[in-house]
Amino acid sequence: MTTPDPHAPPELPPEPIEIAAGTLQLRPWEHRLVPELLAAMRDPVWREWAVAKVPETEEAAGAWIDARLRAWREGRVLSFAVQDATTAELLGSVTLRSFGIWPRAADIGFWTAPAARQRGVAVAAVNVVTRWAFTSLELNRLTLYHALQNTAACQVATAAGYLLEGVARGALPRAGGGWFDMEMHARLAGDPAPRPAAPTP
Ligand SMILES: CC(C)(COP(=O)(O)OP(=O)(O)OC[C@H]1O[C@@H](n2cnc3c(N)ncnc32)[C@H](O)[C@@H]1OP(=O)(O)O)[C@@H](O)C(=O)NCCC(=O)NCCS
Image 1: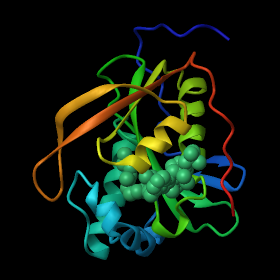
Image 2: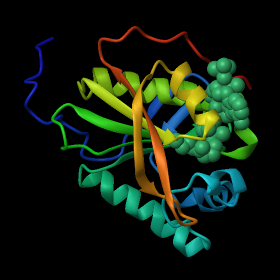
Image 3: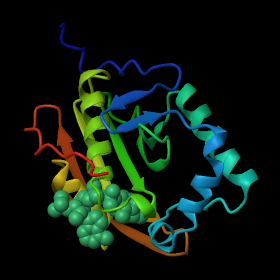
């Protein structure tokens, strides 16, 4: 394998792709998922940490999905719907964004639907996308930001091998008003892999 030019931008897949990961399947967003997406976004915990306006109607959720598909094709945001590989139930999401700020770096974001929480879904899905970003996209760094008070997200970051680097104060607006201080974790391609995590059924 040749070493990528560290100054060159990564070659992103031009169309949304699918990644098989054992009991999880990471798939492109599709309109079939609108009802499950709306249900996940109605969760008060999801809303507590939301930084953008939350879609409230089927139409708005459809537009949210269209925007993600468009952003992938424009090479700005690569967002996966995390699904149960057997039932295709929507379990959560993992997203890579902020391409182009630094040549071989991006940010990673994630959430898990309420019914699928505390089963290792977030850690497993973040690990899968992290591995893919380092191997297929040949990124060198992924940064994971979470609101300072979001202890569950901090646990995910730590379990997925993202080291704490500091706090970005007042970095993101809260959907409900005000600003979030964001704790910054990062993982490098050369960092040791975290303990293997597999979601429990
Ligand atoms: C934070 C969130 C993604 C965790 O998803 P999840 O699939 O339940 O996480 P996992 O099952 O992979 O758990 C990972 C670790 O976090 C811990 N954890 C998960 N939820 C927790 C909670 N509510 N309180 C305390 N610890 C929690 C797990 O015990 C596990 O710890 P371990 O590695 O020591 O075993 C999920 O609660 C969520 O989507 N919340 C709302 C939106 C959000 O916060 N998004 C993150 C924005 S950065």
